[in-house]
Image (cartoon, rainbow, N blue to C red; front, side):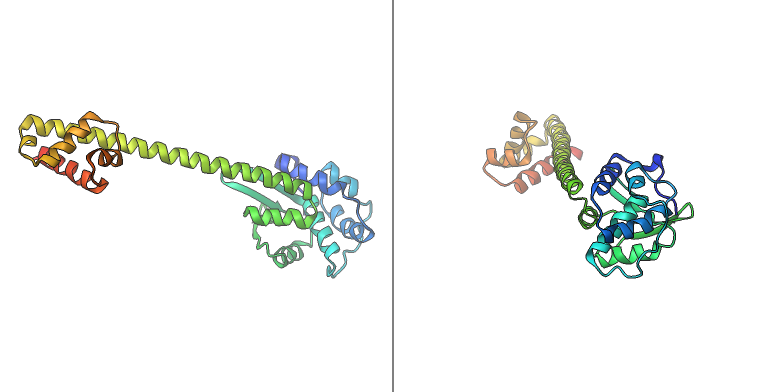
Length: 245
């Protein structure tokens, strides 16, 4: 399988690979990495620095935690990418040839539950959950990138919540203004037709309060009239019904 092409790379991907490549490999790590990296035809500069000139045999068992960590590190260096878009984060792993099933088994064993698909004839394992991506970075040993990733993630979530709150407030304000405009028009129509004068005093009081404060919400009108929001709504609705006759 080929690694990630230059056009597929992102700043996040290069940041992770740069950190993973700086980790000094132990003898065990070197054996795992040298078995994975040469299989990828397109390697970035950090990965090429670790690749050996000859391909060795990958151990059939990766029982040791250090071997599993080196393996995850190797499959990302050989063909991994991480991107951040409007819809969220996406980590992709394109295993070297012969490693598709083993890569998926190790990801599942780590509790990551990757999605798997075939794109352009290549098997791709994907992680979209930010917590799962953070776990992968930790397991692969990219602790510095993990800290920056979490910082960006928190900033992004806070910004998203703030924008959502602002948008919700703006939408509520727009609905309040539109409803107040309709109520004021209904009050004027009812007054011109003479129907407003025939309504009970509490309803006329609600109409007067609305005309005095066209921008006020129902809650604010309820406070001024010393009643409840529900009652104010019902009184204004009664005026609208009278005006529609």
